[in-house]
Image (cartoon, rainbow, N blue to C red; front, side):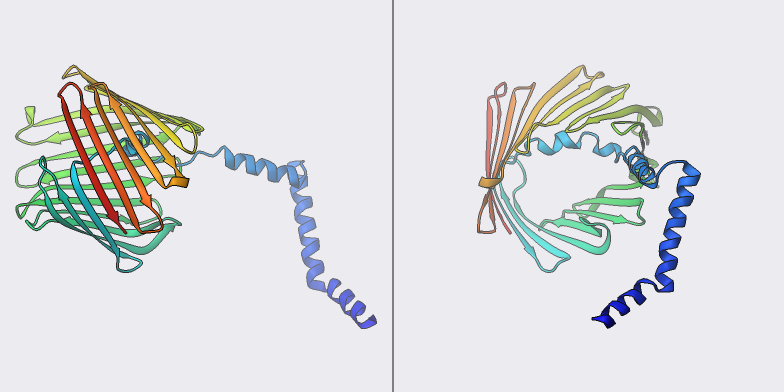
Length: 341
């Protein structure tokens, strides 16, 4: 017993530990002397300062994404989709779509996700492609070059010809985002589209920015045209107001998360040149206990749309029913789909 007490005293009085404790006391004393405040109060002020720091506002492309995500993405006819994961990074998709209004048939898709991670739920590069038996191909590549720079490339082939290309680069600063998009650049034809976007976080709730779209080519009146628009977003708790205002019209959206089960969105798009305006009300209902998600929407053109998705547990199956009705045109479209995997 005496040896244990002696050994404990020798460890507690070792020179190293004495230096550490004295150093921490000197640091606290110096902090108190310089600031004139206790160290605990200094730490609390530092925490409050971090809370008031501005964060990255995202991109201009994501301004109205909250409303778009809860709108019903309807389809027609019968659709069967089979998802098969070949590894942790590679997945293939087989899709069979049968309807009367759009081209029917089989499509093969593949997705590759790399090993470069900048967050818990993000890995890069991401390669996504889809092709049909006729050779029509859609390909997308997304890669995070650095912690702040992300690039996207999209292309579309039809009848063995390149019909559309688009390159986008996003630089995300501490409290701002700059995006540059180049679409269909034609070196030989002298045509293309360039879009530059900037979004700045003014406060924790308010973000303002602008968008400049420039199009040039022989088919453009005057061979070139430029349009400057203003964008903004105001977010409070679970509510988000977003607006895009330009010389050709404006786009206003409002999103509200009423509860964990209900989300509501209202969207108004106005084209001043065509003297047209469309308002859309959308909602999403989630019932986790029933593994059920319903998305519905109603617009000012009297078009009603809804999609019901049901997860068939414990089987790896999902069943979807889609419906779209327009009272003015006296039309109705119904679709059903089965997702496996």
